Amino acid sequence: MSFSSVCRRVGLKDLVSNVNVYPSASEATGGLNLLFRRWATKKTAGSTKNGRDSNPKYLGVKKFGGEKVIPGNIIVRQRGTRFHPGDYVGMGKDHTLYALKEGHVRFERHKLSGRKWVHVDPKEGHILHPVYQNTAASDAASHAYAS
Image (cartoon, rainbow, N blue to C red):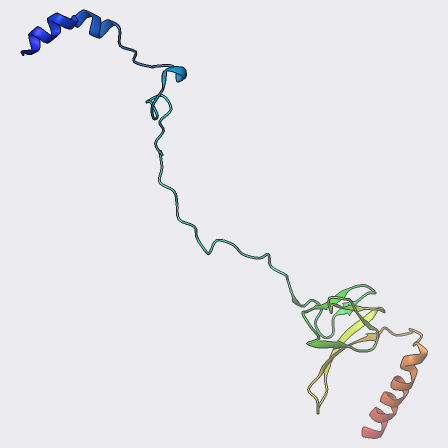
């Protein structure tokens, strides 16, 4: 049977005019038709284990030895107690050291233990708190004895 005889029997005109190019969803009986089939336009990217970073914490010494401070000035921001609070220095819950009185910052290192202390020496004319009067008197006596 030749191709021309098949076209004559069925009618080439009928074949071309009655073909549904975009069939509706209700006519789709088996499998997916071309209307609902989708292909990916991009390949999926693999996951990465990097690509994140934490914000800086800005730790360290903020007021150095000899600098003038007023009450509330942050002297050292730290994790743990690298520096310990001394005279007129307070410590926050995150171990931040801050000035309690107006004066000048002084750093001290203990000779035996190596522990570092931060003190605020109050400005002239400042009335000493009773807790610190003993140490001030002994410091003055030791300085007079040394010279």
